Structures are given as structure tokens and as C-alpha cells.
Amino acid sequence: MSVDTTMSVDAAYGEVQRLTRRRARNFAYGIMVLPREKRRAIAAIYAFARRVDDIADGDLPSVEKRAQLEELRAALDAPPGNDPMLIALGDARTRFPIAESALQALVDGGVQDLDQTRYATFDELRGYCEKVAGAVGHACIAVYGSDDLMRAEALGVALQLINIMRDVREDWELGRVYIPQDELASFGVAEYDIAEHRANDAWRALMAFQAARARAYLEDGRRLLDSLDGRSALCVATFADLYEATLDRIDSAGFDVFAGPPRLSPLTKLRIVGKGLRR
Image (tube, rainbow, N blue to C red; front, side, top):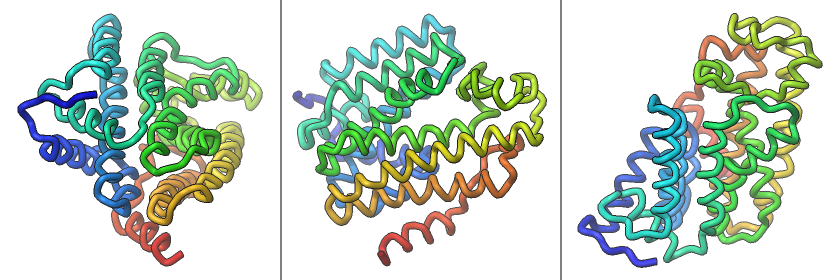
């Protein structure tokens, strides 16, 4: 696809990298170890995913959100104009075989958030996770240089499951409950308990179950490292380690995420990056 715009490509990449540093809780620490072209391309993919999330989670009426998401979908096959994200992503797609189907799946996930706020079973939830996070994995491995779609998807699902645990309160305030309804019932947790921020024994048992599943997906996803070059493997390992550290912190707090999502300090994040460099 061609890139025809008054904004330079370098300036556009500068914008998406600033966005990544400002908005990404863990992403920016992973990509800092990549060579320049890969780092810029991953930042462009993140910026696209961020745009989808911001539209779906914003304050506009659903009909306007849906229209904006469809405009974003159409923009994937149109000149980028003067939008830094689209300019950077367009250039990245000329340099790496980033699948348009993965980017389309991200938009599908945003649309699904408008239509569905509850998930009956984990199979249903997994389908959603594969859209919104597995698709990021599919897009990114084209930059990393691997064709192991299965492991990339598993890693994406793992990270999304950890996000769901971390963001229970935030999602509730948006009117969404991602924890499967049959599992809530099985552990004796009602949505009223979420509304009242009850981190009781039933809640801790439910969340321990969610954590064990996330760790299983994370272990499977880490096998992606075997198909990557050294710096790409370090980047992905850093993502995995940062999210695992977040999960460990949730666990150590007795799964009480209602006071706010756990935060890893910049120093902790840098230590995790350094640990990867010493491997």
C-alpha cells in the first residue's frame, strides 16, 4: 500500500512511539530491546490497537462508536491522510508482512465489546480473546519473524486473561463482566459481589482458578521464543515476564483488585528487562 501524506514517516513513527511510552503499561518496556525498524513497527501496531480500545471504551453513544470503528476498518485500505498512526502502520506494512486479517480482527473485537458484555462460558470468552489479543500476536510475529501462529495466539490469550483479572473493577464500571458466567456461578460469586468489591473466600477461589488458566496459556505461549531471533525473543520474554509479575502481584494481594489494578514500578520493569538481557 502507498504512503502519500504531508507528514513524514519518521514524524509519524515518533508519534506512535510517544503514544506507546505514554499509554502502554508494559508494552514499551518490551519493545525497547528491539532494533529500530521492528521497534517502530510494533509501536504502530500498538497504536492501532489502542485506537480501537479508545473508541470501544469511550463515552460516545454505541452507534457513533460503531461508525468510528467501521471508519477505522475502511482506513486500512485507504490512503492514510495526515493521521500519524495510519501513516506509521502503512509504512510498517510495506516493510513487514503484517496480516490485514489480524488488524481486521482487532476491529471485530472492538465491535464485539459494543454488542456483548457477558460471556456464558470460557469457550465464548476465548473466542473474544483470540480476536483482541491473539490478533495482536498474529500481527506482531510478522515483525518478529516467526510463523508460529498457534503460540503467538496462546501468548496473546494469556496476556488478555491477565488483563481481565487486573481490570475487573474498570470493566465493571464500563458495564462489562468478562469472567465466564458459569464459573461465577460455580464458585458462588454473584455480580453483586463485584459491584460491592467483595474479595471474599469465594472470590479468591474463583480468581485462583482464573490465574491457573492464565499461567497455563502463558507457559504455552512462551514456546514462541524458540522460533525467534535473539532480540525478538528478548522482547517477547520481557512481555511475558512483566505480565507474570503483574499476575504474581495480584495473587500476593489475595486477588483483591478492587482498590485499583496493581502497578509495577519503573524500577521493577527495568529489572525484568535486565534479567532478560542476562539470560
